[in-house]
Length: 76
Picture 1 (cartoon, rainbow, N blue to C red):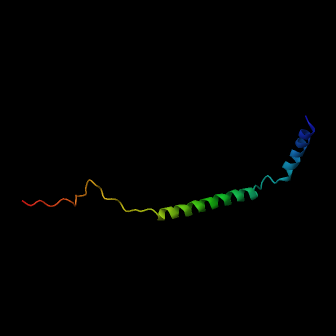
Picture 2 (picture 1 turned 120 degrees about the vertical axis):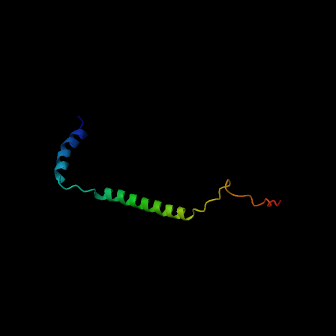
Picture 3 (picture 1 turned 45 degrees about the vertical axis):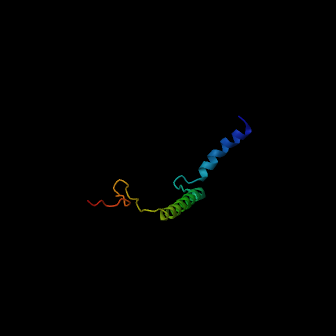
């Protein structure tokens, strides 16, 4: 076993005892991840709203149901 491994092995129990096992918080990293996700969702919603505003919802007429306007009515 090297000196580094021995030092880490001796320091781990000391570091584990300094934390309160009954109080666990996400800390600053959890806040940063949550804030990044919130900003990403906000940006996606803004982009979706902008794209939905550009959509044309008018349907094209069905060519099978349309009557040709160029034909003259036939008279007997």
